[in-house]
Structure formats: structure tokens, C-alpha cells
Image (cartoon, rainbow, N blue to C red; front, side, top):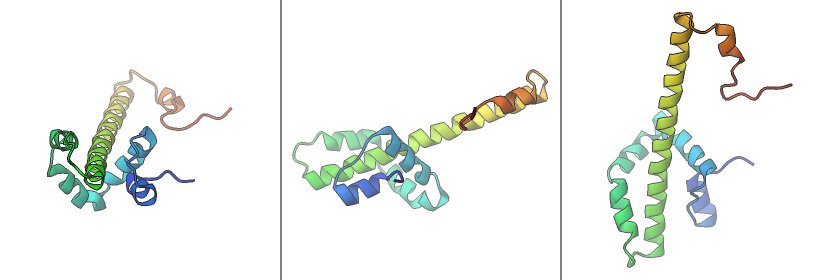
Amino acid sequence: MAALTNAAYLQRYGFVDDCFGTTMVDGKWLVKPESEPIRESLAATSAEEDEKLLSDSSLSIPAKTAIQFRRQLKIALKAQQEAQQRIRMLTWQASVAINDGSVNSSKISKLSLGKRRTR
């Protein structure tokens, strides 16, 4: 079964899932070019505003769920952007190390960067 986004969890089951796997799936689609309108909407409010709204005990369950959904998407987007930045930095560092001769390119190719090694 493919991993679900929070939109799918919300539509199918009526709750927001804050687990790591769902956060990763949400983050992957949030950084795609076609998700620009969603990113713009998310940027319209701050995480602090969301937290303040969620602390309001008079909120209806649907309103609270919508804010939880928005907050979780912001968390996913930030996590994905940070992961992509880290990958860019590691790639740059590896490139510099290869170019200046401080590391052999064959050593780099032996690293398991996101791929499983088979025996």
C-alpha cells in the first residue's frame, strides 16, 4: 500500500496524522511546483497563530481539525525544505572533496546515499 498524505487521511478517516512517514509524503508534494498556491496559503498564517487558535477551547471539532491539518502541512513543508538543503550541502561537500583530491571518487561511490546495499 502506498503511503498516504494527510489530505487522504482526512478525507478517508477524518483525522490528521502527524507520524514521520505521512509528514515525509506531505513534504514531497508540497515542494513541487504545482503546490505553489498551497505554499502561498500556508504562508498567510504563522505557526504561532495556529497554536494560538488551537488553544481556543471554543473551536468546533471541524475548525480544530482544519487548523491541525494546516499546521501539519507547515511542519511537513519545513522538514522537506530542510532535508533538501541538507542534501544540497552534502552534495556540494562531496563535490569539493573530490575536486580538491581530499577524497577519492571511488570512495564516494561506495557510500550508501539513500540506496540499500545488497550482499
